Length: 265
Image (cartoon, rainbow, N blue to C red; front, top):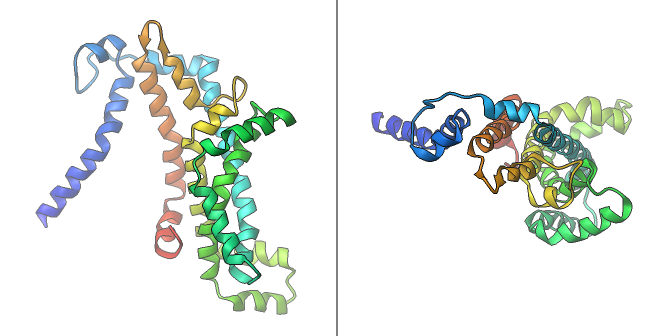
């Protein structure tokens, strides 16, 4: 028993060490970071965070990232709900092939679609907007959300649909009032994964933006200059980048637990 606890403790320390080191670096000067290895800041400084919160090019990167990630999460879950219901409740010609084709989009590398998206969005005026990245990420996140939600919906008995129809419920009313609360865990899990995949994706986000909608991941490359790497600012930006994901995990933690138990997670 003690050996198992020790292994778990060592594993947690191993996982938390990079995060601690990132936080540790964010409160140091570049001189201290590059000169000696210290377990805590000997010269505590908040200048790295001050630069991020006062420089528009830095905090706009976070705002731009949150814009397209939230848009993508709403669009992906919104498109996936009726599609997953159709796959769950109906049988039609080629349904299994169509379902596999949706998942195959998730398997394709983003680099394959970067050039077509760039050309298309430049032609229709969506380039360098949050909508460009949000719609591009739907190509990968909608299939994932459909796959997750279909597993939850298949676990809901069909008799509930039939009973609601007998009681006089219209389909939109039934879907919103009765069916959606039953799969709330699945919606939370799907939204979580859509948010996280869109938040960490870099290639399409950089390719489809330039100035007005540049994400924080692209902004972080500005720390490289002729004077060298601005390690402190880069570490502070990394710490702040972890916060949205941590908050999402905190709010949907109960749904994620149910998702591992009931759904396709």
